[in-house]
Image (cartoon, rainbow, N blue to C red; front, side):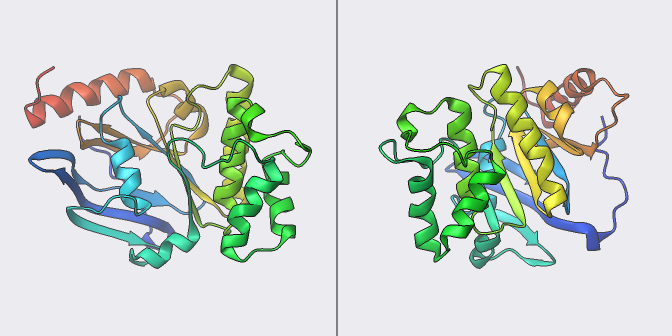
Length: 247
């Protein structure tokens, strides 16, 4: 299986990684990963658990330092100050269970020096403006995820990074979150989301990258006529054969 690079106008690219590598001691978690993410699109990073998806996203959000490689963001080399225009929800939302939705967002807005108008705006975006006095500890998983996204949207990000955003959600919560994520490119927000659930990514993403055992085995635009499950399994097989990984 050859990686589908395709032709793209670099002026439309928001984020690019070149041979991104992360090692923990002698173990390589991410190996020479080169992503290309178009502006105002949804990029789905697919792969089984432990494939290197979360590690890659943690590097992009500054949680982890890369071992080698290069990251380009909005036409320049990535620097920590770029995090001011990158929102993220990695792992569990950063919530205080004893605070309301408004109070949770206000904690972060205050740190960023933002007004209450911005708090109301992001709560409306994620449809939580009517949460009232209910404490976050009483929220459903879907409500917690949406509130976490509200916090990630506070700084008007150009890029929103979501790690397994639908994990643990019921079907209604998944549909609500799917609709919300789909709306972001229209607002000028590019989204990268990771998932191991093929059907979810197939319904929401414009482009996909398939990462297997730390290696990017495939990258390309989603073609609705393709069988994503078949493609995924082919990429898994070919990537492991190429890299000499036994399973």
